[in-house]
Length: 68
Image (cartoon, rainbow, N blue to C red; front, side, top):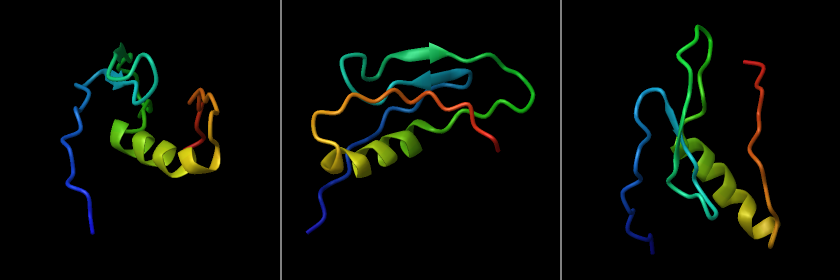
């Protein structure tokens, strides 16, 4: 049986939303620069939800300086 989906607050343009922990739902300003494309909060939340059962009690910093 599928759980009902709760609405996910989306960050506004030029902002990134923290998706977990003490600062959950806090928004951070992101500069508008060519080529800068932060991951959507939905993608980050999904990745951490997949990892959570495999890393119980872990503290994780999503600090990705991507390559593409």
